Every structure is written in C-alpha cells, then in structure tokens.
Image (tube, rainbow, N blue to C red; front, side):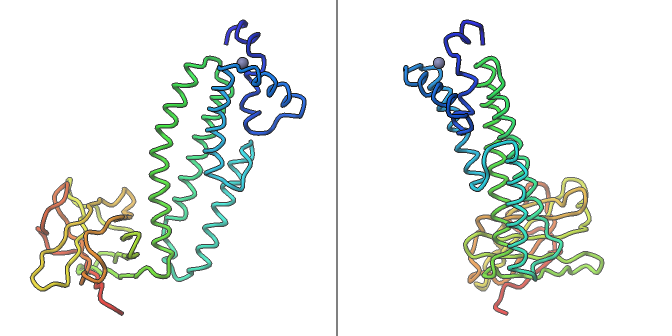
Length: 272
Ligand SMILES: [Zn+2]
C-alpha cells in the first residue's frame, strides 16, 4: 500500500478487526464513518473480511476467531471425539478416524488462520488476493478430506451401523472389520496388512444375494506404509438387504470388473 493509499484509506488496516468485532468503540466508530462515505475499496475489503470470518464461524461455531481459535477448536473436537467414544465404547479401540478428524480440523484451521494473517498483513492487495485464492483452493481439498473423515467417524459410531467381521482365509493374515451404515456407506478397516506386490491393489466386492448374480465391484485401495487399510465407500453399489457378503481380493492396479483371484477376506452380511 503506498502512502497515498494510506492517506485515502486511513482505516484499511482496521477492516478485518472491524469485521471480527474486536475494535474498541472509538476505532469502530471511525471505521464505520469512513465506510459510510461509500469508499469502494474499504467496502470490498470489508466484504472479504466478513467472508473469512463467516468461514471461521462455520468451522468453530463456539469459538471466537482470535489467537485462541485453534486451541479452542481442538478442545471442541477432542470433546466431540470423547463424547462419541463414550456413546459407543465397543467400537474398535484402535480406529483412527477420531484422530484423523482432529488432525484434519487442525490443518484446516491453520490454513484459515494463515489466510487471515496474510490478509491482515499483506501489504499489496493483488498478492493478498492471489494468496487467498490459493489458500481457498487448499481449503476446498481440506474440506473434502474433513467431510470424508467426519462421514467415516459417523459410520463407525452410529449404533445403527452393521458390524461385519471379515476374517482372512490365510492363517497369518490379520482380519478386517467392515462397518456398514445404510445411508452413509461402508468403512473397511485393518492393520498390519502385507503390501500387495508391484502395483497390485486390494479391491472390495459386494456379493449379491440373488442366485447366480455377479459380484459388484467396489473401490480399490493399497494399505499405507504402516500396513493400515482404511477404505470408505460412500456410495455402495448395492444395499445391505441385497448383499450376502463382502469380499476383498487382490487385483491389478485400477481394479477389475470381476474378481480375478480368490478372496483374501470374506464377511457375511446376513442377519445376526
Ligand atoms: Zn477507504
């Protein structure tokens, strides 16, 4: 911002604080008076700041968007995780989603906070806009991750979800645990899995009840470097009522339209 800008928009630096409601009454009145003159640049800055504040509010409805935002949101997230755990104590002790939910939320808040800092301190409007555009792009990706993590947590904790044990046919292979929520989808989780050779992958199948029906192909996923397998199928190709069993086979990269190997894990979906 040049000196000329400073002179024309003496309250530009206070716009974000104004949007946050954190100015003292005198400053607040001064900014309001300047905005009342119809200054387009400051009005634009205000609407951007208000957008940012609304995004922060969306993430943490209980928290004031301030320096303590991150700490408070994390506390909220932990409390939510603890409450969910207390409500469903028999859920797999070692499941990751609560942890993941917290981590993703933390990263998201960091991104928002950085966007806010950049916005507040960025001396050149164009740079700030570019920075915000890039951060916004990152945020959309994070929002998607967050939504998936949240969905997975809901599937795992809802008592209406059906738990489906998926033992392995191989003696030394750890079992998988599937959890199927009628509306939200299927989570298949396992740990200490061996890595499929080359680019081969693990693929989930839904075995229909209808006699002679072909297995319905679902998603593929490789275990991570630690052998953790955490698959979320948000839109299963078939319903619980029409499905006899879940199976997982090893397939070439990208998956197959029909299984090409004997299932490594199978779990029965039939009524308990
Ligand atoms: Zn102005």
